[in-house]
Length: 214
Ligand code: GLY
Image 1 (cartoon, rainbow, N blue to C red):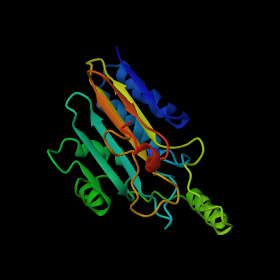
Image 2: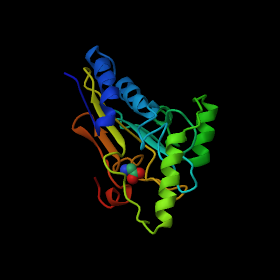
Image 3: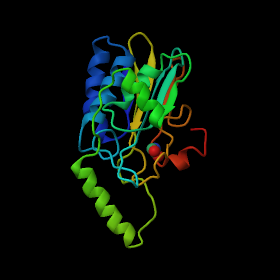
Image 4: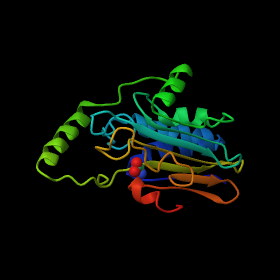
């Protein structure tokens, strides 16, 4: 038996690839990282990875987490800039004994030292969205809301050995303050998985989600 679920339409291609991995007997770890990386790499998804919408200083800051449901080991990054696949950095951090959740410059130093691929994550398309939003904000439409229909990609996988994993990745709230981190990389809020019970990931406004023990 194997299975995989994910949030939003944007996950379908990655999910299909992850499901193929699981069907062939691959691990839930491999499936999740492969599937979420695929979503991170697609330039037209505005809320995850490359092409994600920027903060109020027009910088793309990314959050991601990975959890192993058998060992309960986890890794997470917050507000990381210009690395291609934050989910891979999160997975790498999950094998550390401590320092599993790194943010900002610390996360970037770790990723650089470990040889993770750098990439400018701000696209021309995202710049246009930014400029349009600045224009609207100047016209007093200044309430921050999660963009409709797109948010965190979250996935849960179960492999044929009974191991479950979960992962999340997001560029967070459009026009957030620099350094703002939402629920997505927070274990117990953006995601949780226990191979004996099940797994879950959240999608929505982090400031609302973190008010409860999701
Ligand atoms: N749920 C994504 C965020 O609020 O950052």
